[in-house]
Length: 77
Figure 1: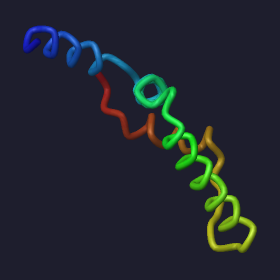
Figure 2 (figure 1 turned 120 degrees about the vertical axis):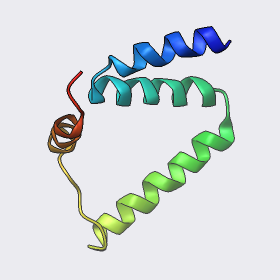
Figure 3 (figure 1 turned 90 degrees about the vertical axis):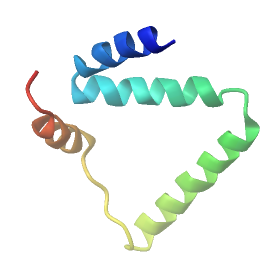
């Protein structure tokens, strides 16, 4: 596994910030599919965030702006 881990790490280093985020999302979804507790927890979290927005306790940010800022922080290969 150590050899595979090093190879995987090298491949991950070559990804852009956006690609890493997309991969992380895919990993989370695949790791937690078929888990009703996970779905329930995310449902509650989504409701909590929407309620906070409605009460003016939180602000929304444009996803494209956030991703662009993350990409700008990504060191050049």
